[in-house]
Image (spheres, rainbow, N blue to C red):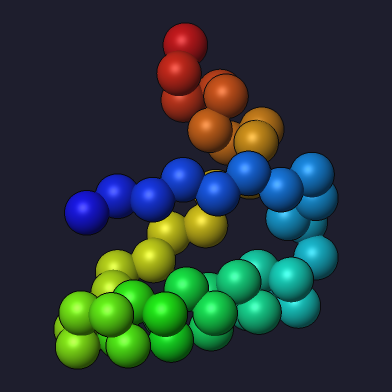
Length: 50
């Protein structure tokens, strides 16, 4: 399963940590499995598309 989440600013490490914890908790609750989470900034994602 793959999810996409768009936020305006993921440059703050605290925000990335909070997103990781939220997604991890939701996924574990729904599936009982530990998720593999990758957080990518817009700049990283956009540069990889080319």
